[in-house]
Image: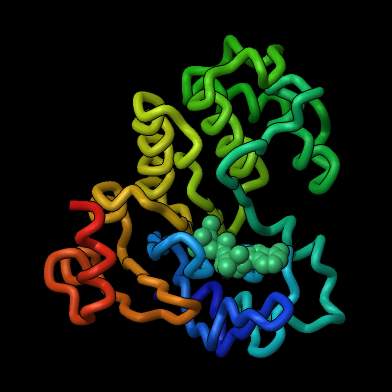
Length: 243
Ligand code: ADP
Ligand code: MG
């Protein structure tokens, strides 16, 4: 498998608190990685650093052959190659669902309006939200909003999709529909790095599980190994919380 994204020795502090302490991580094309770990272990910070939303203190981030952590790099141009969905507040409240989904393609990719809208409607159709295209986000359920946010993130055909606990703010009955969409993207070959507390989903869909503990990767491997026979005591202690 060819490595698409590679973090090498990432360090990140907020004032005197070291949040990432030497992270080495690769993400191959078409790979799905589930990033697990306790609250505060640094999952969101890692995703934000990889997304160039947060500067790193030390290390390097390679996207293909390009060092995207080089300060001379155009961060917006790099981010245009990524898609990201966070826990909540992903959609612009003042825009219709359709405009939310087409905005990045039209502004960043300069896709003509009609073409962007045709593609957006096809994507919304696929997730059963075509009839909500002209609604504002507040008329949608939380699950529908997150699915629309995912569709917005993939509308530009990103090389990597970053998902940060996208179901954490949802009522339990709405979690499934969002995870099913992620599963279908994974089956279509998307490259995904997702921070999640949905262990059953991670076990089922991820190719690799990475366990973050206090800013370090404490353990990583195929889900069957990390969940079925964790090598590290810290991993075991963390996973027992989900039993
Ligand atoms: P996780 O996503 O695993 O819960 P985070 O990456 O959000 O962990 O946070 C890791 C640590 O970094 C926490 O102690 C958090 O308080 C701290 N942190 C995160 N973002 C900031 C920030 N912008 N300023 C200061 N501290 C932060
Ligand atoms: Mg987080």
